[in-house]
Amino acid sequence: MNLGKLGQAITVRELFDLIQDDLRLVEKRLTAESVASVDAVTAIAHYLHSSGGKRLRPSLLLLSSKLVAADPAVPSPMAIQLGAVVEMIHAATLVHDDVIDAAETRRGRPSSNVKWGNHTCVLAGDWLYMQAFQVALRERHFQILDLLIGLTQIMVEGELLQLERIGRIDVTEADCMELVDRKTACLFSVCARLGAISGGADVHTQEKLGEYAWNLGMAFQLVDDMLDFTAREKTLGKPVGGDLREGKVTLPLVYALERATPAERAIVENILGRRDYQQAPFSRILDLLTRHQGIERVKDRAQSFTDKARQIIHEFPESPYQRALLAVTDLVTDRDH
Image (cartoon, rainbow, N blue to C red; front, side, top):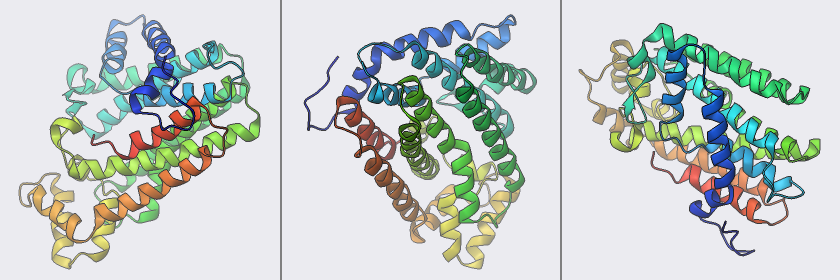
């Protein structure tokens, strides 16, 4: 384990070195806890867990736990358990999202609904949610259950709100920020708070780490919304421009539409109505976003959330884990997929 030198910035590689042993334990727990009495559910769960994600959410939980723990070198059984819980919840949201969006790919592979069908995947997602709560219940800790239940309700409400706005061009900046909060930032926040709980932190510290991670999550999703337009399909792991094709107007487009001509708005409305780029190629949308600074403005918003997250974590005493949480902000904002 490389703890680096005090006062020096930590690299992303060193960040994961700090928690690699704990992450292996989380992986083992995930595999063990994702076995159902129905083979299809087990297969879907393992397919999702093996899809090559960065495990950012359990990593955030583990780093938060070690930041406040009396002896961070000793793995926390509660943090390991909760790391598996948040990854199961995340997997459940992915499988439900793919069904709702009629997605065909996820991280460069066929999406689970393509392989197993919508009906099976909806039930598998339900099972993953319930299994996550079953595992969390073993801690016999009401605050943990309270956080997870509240989180799940907020995320489901976010999906419902997004469904109500599908195909609409009158989506506002406030609408977009509400969805970013509900779909991503709240999960990041709960991960850090669960980490703080497992590390024995007081309520004030739990809230502080939760605020750090909420800002991080807001930045993460805003960068995601930009990458949907600007990334290469190979690195994105799914078709570029997918949000608009699915009828979703995200913040880059909201900003561009504020300055767009009636003719340009009509192009966007055509895509929203048809759910394809046949009459208006994706390159025209990218040009619209560039000329009206939609991408640039969202990049600035994401940076403001990143700056706030960094400001909060700077308030903690310097340690390898404090520097690792600073490095996470770079991982989120500088990624290309």
